[in-house]
Image 1 (cartoon, helix red, strand yellow):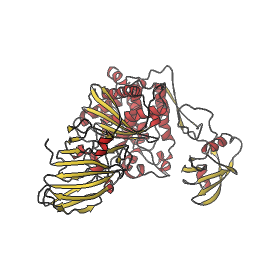
Image 2 (spheres, one colour):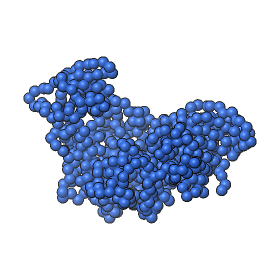
Image 3 (cartoon, rainbow, N blue to C red):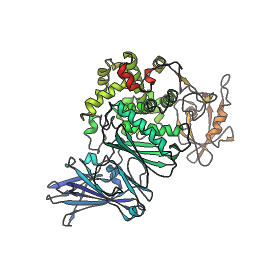
Image 4 (tube, rainbow, N blue to C red):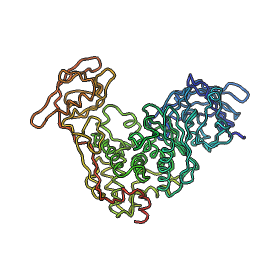
Length: 609
């Protein structure tokens, strides 16, 4: 098998030391100098991560074995003098990042993204690449198999051998999973799919398989019945409590809690399982929306410096809107369940005072700092382009539907973007999506975007949703952990204006303080450790919740004395309790509602309305 001019090998060399060994052979280095570099961030995760900090012993030699001097240009780039003779670089990669963004390797499994392990040959990024994945004695003895979406050239029955990618951008967009995973195979709209799950867990594979088929087929139909790939792979790392995902061109890397997986005998889907299906739906939706329908600035990025755009409200917010809606359309959940999920999503926005201080467009632009590097003041200062972006998507969908009598919807905008941008590879300029929404819908949506995307106004769901047979309301919480939706129990009469977390030594830690509210007025701050209220030990947040439920603020004010540690200093404060905020969203469905928005097969309804 002929190797490409840019050829890599990767060996899972040391599971105890968490080390991959990598070589890069450049058949025709540029003259008089050649530069190589590693990305500083990975597409889909907008934070400078400096993957090069994990590279060890980077050396270069000619084909004849002569040492080649490497000059470090900056934190992630090297240069060497060249006369055009082939050069091989070798290095180790420390892989101890158990996440979907980096590389991980121990005795249980191996996982890596190309951005963590493969140096780019600057100036030759358009060249085809080959990768030889080597099998070690450890891999053989433990019967490790390989799962990846990268095209196969010649591999053994366990997946070790030669792979090929059309260029460097493709090479780094195929993550690899190695280990003894559980595998699920299925077809959706005639396309081969599979899911591999690594970790310790019990699972009802048949139920998961059937639900995945429904999700994938619903999304393929949404985009005109045309899948943009020949096959697809879900790579799932199962742990005790992790959650997250990252999209790729024909795969996704996911993390979930073992408690979120379906088990044999489970009757009604658990909240955790529905959350996992939402995650699968979200990342699969990215096949179209962000992997192929893309901001132009991302297409031009070399992954060294941040790429700034206002458009993440579309690529993550619209995707976040559809991820649960797809479950409804696929028949996995009903309208009542969907409204519960939607109410919880809305609550996450309505509990953020920062939504009045930062627009969603600004949230997108500053994702590199304010969103991806949140501090304890984040709820007071920022808003998420995921959560409020999804509410903008809902508002946009309802606005288009209600002004066109359901002849048009957000589905039509998506299909237009797929046909004219996704299929052609044309990138979207800043502000272009907004004009396309108006063009496709036939409506002037400039005021909508000015108010809700570039402004900080709340969307008027109390006006829009009743037209769909849904009542929108805001209520007080029933508990400190109330996520919204239909009230479960009596409402709390008072609140502290702070988020709390139990500690391992039976105290309560303040994690966030809402500006202007009770804890703020008393001088408490994030990081403070509460020991007692009114002279009684506060062993957990549930103790505080029980005390709050006994408060009566109707005829008198209530003040609590609070003893707490700030760092190692014992302090005391008086907290004047305030009436509980009405910031939990509750959505009630009219039993007689025939809303087109809530129809299961809305994609077909739109075509015949």
